[in-house]
Figure 1: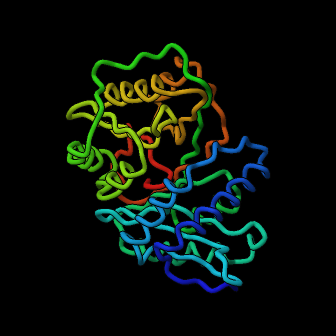
Figure 2 (figure 1 turned 30 degrees about the vertical axis):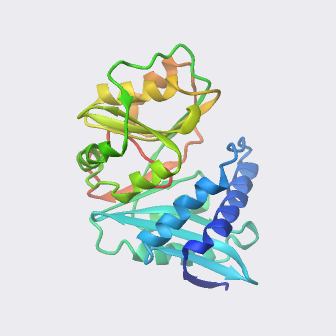
Figure 3 (figure 1 turned 120 degrees about the horizontal axis):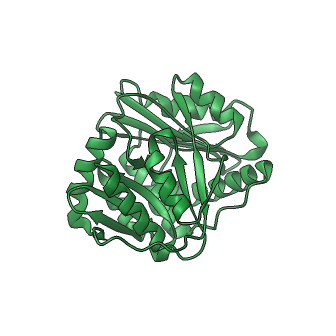
Length: 284
């Protein structure tokens, strides 16, 4: 078994490279299109951030001087989530992933709520259910948005709006994202706001949606329309569980297609209504 140790900020580059290999392998096995390449420098910000904020929940596995496994988890105001779990394809089904999951899950001991966003991989689905979490299967909306206008209710946000994001997060999922919103802003995203009611985080230059939370469905729809209106080319809206029915018509009206390969949201405990909400794959 490879040696497992706590992740350090300087592991960020190797962790990202391993994650890319693993997700490319997943796409190949399921016949899915490969996601557009991420800017490594931007991705490294996330990995370094989690190694610093959650040192007791982030682990790597080493073999022959290189990383062959990464498990990252976060804990915010009593809410635990699994941010990343990847194992080198040649070492999958050897028990390494189970051990990394065990260590990251231990960081959630005593948490009042837990969240994992899962791919459709059968091994992942089985492992997360065995942790005691319940799945909600998800759709994914994909395509190039057409005929979408940005609502007048939405304005650009700044770091001064972080208190708004915290208040909305606590209402929607029972816990603020804390320093994670600042990390996202460091990752060259755009923050969109409906004052007093919700926010969305989009990738720069119309690259797609990363996170959306609102106190009511009207504000959520406006934020989603704003993200779609800013899209440049094809984009995907993920984690469309039954709780997020408010988003389906917005996506269909924009000409996006629905797919059934959206994985599942696993959760248990006190996670708030979790609606209207489209979680972040990295920050839950």
